[in-house]
Image 1 (cartoon, rainbow, N blue to C red):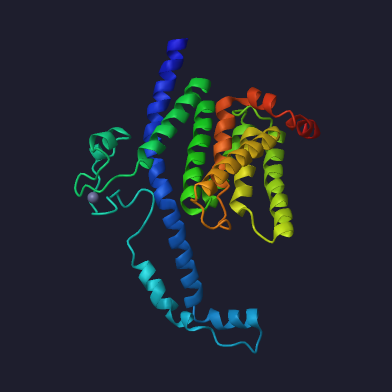
Image 2: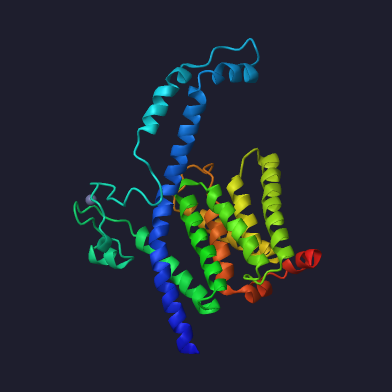
Length: 321
Ligand SMILES: [Zn+2]
């Protein structure tokens, strides 16, 4: 039995390393794809010359000023964006960001290649960031944990998908302060489907209420904070991410997740301020990484421990149960 568990964990870990390598691509490219899409949309909206005058009239009224010169150049800008080579998750193949050296398959083996190449591009010697093997190792460890706890089953696969999506949101938010809708919604739908198919062990009602309360809870905090301080303390992506976590873990986890993430956020934020890393206190600290991290922590330490640590969750649980 124990040997079988170890074997499951080892298979899960290797799968996790491989998926982690793909997550590196997602983390690197998805924000670029989003930015390019937004630029294309903006220029396309401005360049549709028949529409702009009537839209301008609708927005500014009849006696409006003429559209700014930007509109006249939008066609040109759109052509420039359109002329770029296509960018997707599968294409183009990975290249060194410095010299353009195409990365061969044996240079792309999770963690191992990083060690063999001594953290440098084989062509130009530019250092490769430690974050790439770190993402692979963390994903590998999380997949091994899922396989250890749930076996090589559909349940294990569901929780592994949960981990993979949270790793992406953690890193993307850290890099860009974005939490892409495409990943948040995927996480949310999968959580509801996993609950409805009995994979997560969370009753469907608890998953639905977890999603609703996760979104509304942060939405409420956001507006109260803005009323009190005039500042925006978090982004709408945070609401969606907590909604998704609520769908996966159930409504009774929400308070624990928010507590864990706020605690980690406050401690890390304080440390960064003290270390002088945050020169401007008004720069919003991403909340997403702490939410994603708290979701992973809750999965890792298990439902019973969380319930024991967060007795406040019980009254809430009674309300919905
Ligand atoms: Zn290079």
